Amino acid sequence: MALTEQPVIPDAPPAWISILKMLWRDKFAFCAALFLLLMILCAVFGPALLEGVATKQNLRGRNSPPFDFSQPWVMWLGGDALGRPLLARIIVAAQNTLMVATGAVICSMILGTTLGLIAGYSSKWASQVIMRLADVIMSFPSLLLAVIVLYMLAPSVGNLIVVLAITRIPVYLRTSRAEVLEVRERMFVQAAQVMGASTRRIVFRHILPVVFPTLVTIATLDFAFVMLAESSLSFLGIGIQPPEITWGLMVSQGRPYLTTAWWLSFWPGLAIILTTLSLNLLSNWMRTALDPVQRWRLDTPRKK
Image (cartoon, rainbow, N blue to C red; front, side, top):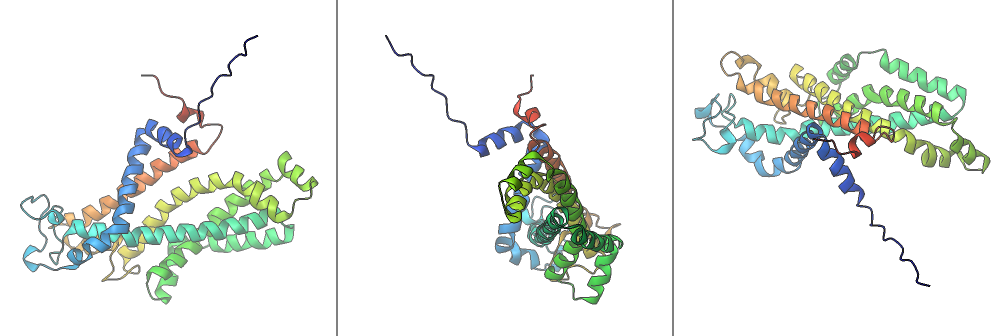
């Protein structure tokens, strides 16, 4: 009797290939991811390559108009009031702008999520204390609180990250607490309690992985908000100070020349708009990709 051959099951592709395929099917999210990758590369390598060019003054090229392709490529977007190339300055300024937003989002996400997990799984007394702390922070408008604190402290990258992180803690705190209150009633959490798992293991091994995708989606949206807040503070003159540069500071420096040299504020403002739009598009894609119920929309190829 001949033995029947077992069918060979092909190996599943790596997870990152599946993610790229899902991203490719959403063309807007794919373009947004490419643009954000370009901005990250500018932030990482831009200052090392172009910092000298971005700070070099050329008074003969004051307010040089854009699209003069007879000039070096760093002058294709024009020059500022001191003749410094705008393209090089935008590339260099990406580091400070993205560093402030990234630091503020990571700090607020870690602190807010930790407090939210404690408030959702600990005693009622501890939950009430933590939630009242969140109410106190939320009682002040975030931008106004940042303005007041930065007037008292010296404007710097570190102080800016701390201030913006504090104002965004309640977002993650309230979201994680609401998720924990719902997840803790599920059967797998109750099973872990019956089997004698410690509170720490239940929170970090069973509850946090379920809550984390929601927090990542919120962080993507919050990144755009924090970047706009940093740009607003720099525009008001209480953010990062010269000789450091950010996109918001460049918009502020070009404000007196809006009627004669619009490009001084237009190009850094466009960089802010495109980065914020890309983050929002990528956040919408992540909301679907991280949701097991909705992920089939990205896994299924669309019919032409």
